[in-house]
Amino acid sequence: MTVADVVLVHGLWSDGSSWSEVIPFLHDAGHRVVAVQLPLTSLEDDVVATRRVLERMSGPVVLAGWSYGGTVITNAAVAASNVSALVYVAAFAPDKGESSFQILQNFGATVGEAVQPYEDGLCGLDPDRYREVWAADLPAVRAEVLAAVQKPSALTCLETSSGEPAWRSIRSWYQVAEQDRALPPVAQRFMAERMGAVTTSVPASHSAPHSRAREVADLITRAAVSTA
Image (cartoon, rainbow, N blue to C red; front, top):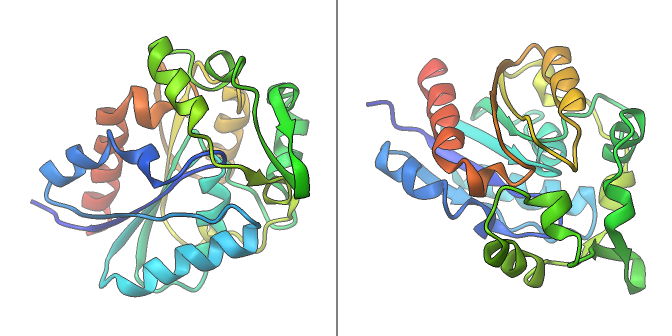
């Protein structure tokens, strides 16, 4: 059995518990797992929070990101000598100088219509549209809970340009969510191909870590085995 340190990075409007369904499968596979708690105050702050966790790990580390978490791992893994693999789950994988928002614009994403601006530059998803846009394959009760516990996030997280991408130097895997209404599947496939990632797909909404936890965990384990 290949045992790896696995670091999981969540997306906007959420926290580390986004991986709560995935983690038991990773534990069953023998991996040591830490889910980062991002402040979601800026891309820079989120990268710093992730690097702090990476510095605690002995490695090799499989670093996985979901949604905006993909932008975070793309930047956090640069110069991280203990990261052996990057795994993107329905995630942004920006190139240098590209922002998450630009990717959404380039592929005609409409998720912005469901974003509610708050005070101080923070935002969230409209609870009435949360399931439709974010979690269409989850039971209504589950989606309502996730909508209720959203963590307000800074708009600048999406607007900040990415630095040199770690996927240029670290082997990458990508899982496309084929029923995603937030980050269009065509955008996901474009990014996966651009980075030369090993690519799989699941019939899932944007909330694949919740609805397809086993498949997500299996891909992370596959990356761990391939880079051991």
